[in-house]
Length: 201
Image 1 (cartoon, helix red, strand yellow):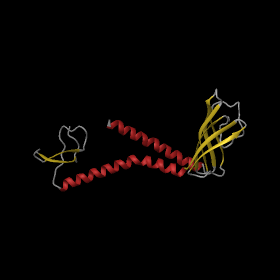
Image 2 (image 1 turned 90 degrees about the vertical axis):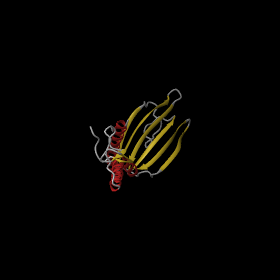
Image 3 (image 1 turned 180 degrees about the vertical axis):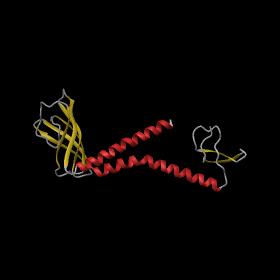
Image 4 (image 1 turned 180 degrees about the horizontal axis):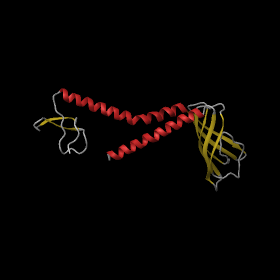
């Protein structure tokens, strides 16, 4: 179980590192370019309901969006009417950087008329915030390991100052941890301290 948990934590750290690097590259690109990646398709084709999800970057700000309605379009930053021939698809569009939206905003808006319309929700966050979040997630596991080692070393020094010899039992199979302390003759001292020596084979 501990091995599985360790593998899971290391996998999360690798994914966080990759997202950290990707966010840094996107941050640099967003200074001079704008990008939008998303998907648009039917929510209920029989009812004529269209929907879309995606994210855009512009001027160091990320905008997450989602819309639904009777208008058929894909890019909410460039709506030029309903395109009835549009089919479900993924898309990516790039352009030159323009005025970025305000960060830390959540908006719900509705547009339309003449029986057609759509509602859209947007959330804008600065890229530096996402960069810091992924950096913290990447450094979390190494930090926890360092703290754990520091605590174990402190407990070991405290036991040594009290004159105990923290020797592991022969039947210990889980590695060094908190074990009964024995003196040189093998008699139990009735105390528990971290093991300073590797387990015996």
